[in-house]
Length: 135
Length: 135
DNA sequence: CGAGCCACTGACGTTTGCGTCAATTTGTAC
DNA sequence: GTACAAATTGACGCAAACGTCAGTGGCTCG
Image (cartoon, rainbow over all chains, first blue to last red; front, side, top):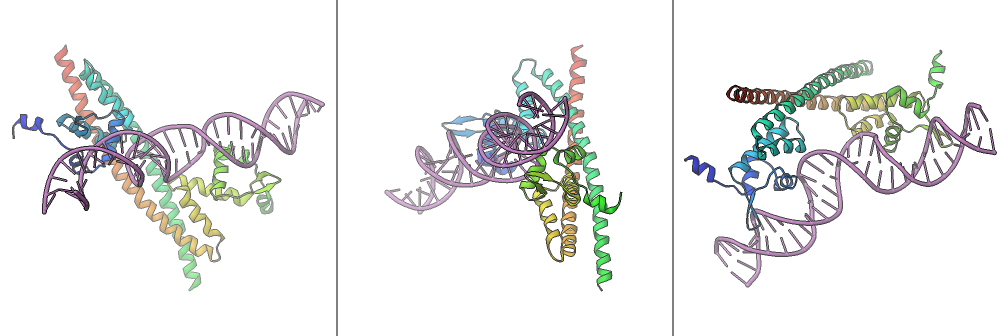
């Protein structure tokens, strides 16, 4: 398959849904929010190579905890002149912020796990006590 | 202070709010959801020692990620005959489930962090490239 | 030519945990 | 007595990311 073929290829909504395990509702929602805007053949959505690439970025963003509005903000810079530079700088900054947030979250999660493990131990201790006495 | 004193002591809603850094709205909300039900002097809420203990459990539950409905489910068993046994067993099971969920979350969080760190590196690399070329 | 099937739009619903009024009452301080 | 703080209820709002109809249209297979 040549590059031309690759870039000429298009997808229907259901094809993308299957490939990335999302619902049509989700894709239309992203479109409504301005994260995607596929061409139409009549009224049917036709996703091209770039739309698909954007979708991949959207899903990646979601995986690392970005909100759709933040993802949109970053994607939108593609359309600006000097887009590369600005887009890269914003992306870099946003990603570091997100990284900080994720790491804070990690700390909290660790604390929660430890607190819960301690409590688990206590509760199971109480159950053992009761079993011993009850027997 | 004797034990009697301790157990006789009561709190107003605002006292508890200050002590645990929650809003009155939150406490009323918990009550509406059936997690608390303080006595009333007339129409004013009076929280006793046990109400306060329940609140502590509620907040602890929240910290480790339980939903209010789950916390309620566990608290409700206090009222059953054989409450101790049943309550402890349910609590133990729920807590292990929650612990599993938290650990899965931890794995996902780790993955997200690593993905984001890789992407960060890539983006910063691109920025460096541009700077080098541009200068 | 009817039966599915896929697609579309628009609107309302869901979940969770409160926040934010607004109007009212009551107790307290001066 | 009056002003002010503190408490109450009820109702509506909000954020996020869709889910779930309901109603409509068009393609295609046999």
